Length: 539
Image (cartoon, rainbow, N blue to C red):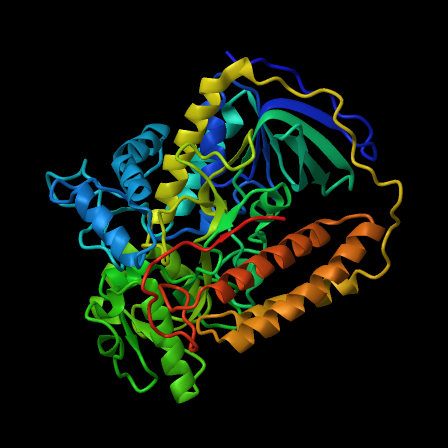
């Protein structure tokens, strides 16, 4: 049994608070809440959430979770599909570990009450409906209509709220990790309502903050995807790997009123085809699997056609399947498009590629441990070796649950052998003042995302990357000066993190002298003789 220490009652809103828990989870999506729930019977847990619960990327995941659930499917087949999509950079042992634990991960979610879609055919009402997605050789995507993430998120939030040992801190953003004697001891956390920087000490800290796709001007991600966990881990001395592999989802809705609205991979999996403005289908020219090719190939093909023809978008058409099919399979997407004046059951949808997923991240082992004792990373924040140079569709949520379980088991196995540190220093804000130049933050944020999109996007060159790196260095200097002199805000914390992660992406891209998976450069269009990870070490 882990040792419980009660959190002190809050003081005045303007006074920094000190909290003590067994486990501090930074992030409240699928990965973070899964860890919290699985340790909470034996530990006191704090969960840090940047906004409101349910606001993160998990809630917006449409397609589903890849898992070997059908008798005609096999672990070997799922492993092979993942390795193929990963373009030679997947770690096969980690891929197999993940896939082998896929069924039990889904069963855990079913037991919690996630309402996955069932088959409607007579006699099969208790079987789950599985869809096909790009890069998969079998139907193995379990889903809850086209809003799987929302179903999973709502269930996990309900479970977390019920548990007496889990404290949920909404509208809090972690600033920096606290390390002493070579171990992570907690974190400094900004309370966005009181503006105080509070101290959270814990035996174990879990980073589950998601990816960094907000580094790009066009993204399917929410504003919270600013690479916070990756940046904090780097500053604490942890290695990162494969940061150059940024997945661009091929089909983000192109509409002035649709901010970051994703058109699920499952639309193509169920027969949707990509068209040019003249109605010509083009994907068969690029890959034998056409629209079901891996995402990097589809995104690059769309980017190529848009540049070749000088067009703003291409079109995704599933209207040939009929209104009943479209409405029953994609109710959320159908409804949202109707709100925007687009009827996908009768006409093609305008789509463009957008930054979607960070395949690299903080290096961890099979138990979710980073280089820093006491610090774990799970989900999109981490680098497990599962995704390689390109993530296979719907493997991301699976990774969250498999490694959340592994990290939770490892934490519980150590129990009270790890002491909670006393005497950690409070956040020092004695030398800073309030800023009257917040316009600098918004300007730098915009500049960063624009040069990342222009120079470090779907197609790259060495010259563009070098230009981006010089701008990233200048921005980091400006941000560091601002950070040193003014009281921090959530915008400043996120900008500081995003600038650091952008630099890591650029450095990784410059170091890869080949085109592999999601990293495509005109200066090195072929594959290198040997495949290897891009590992960056602080210092």
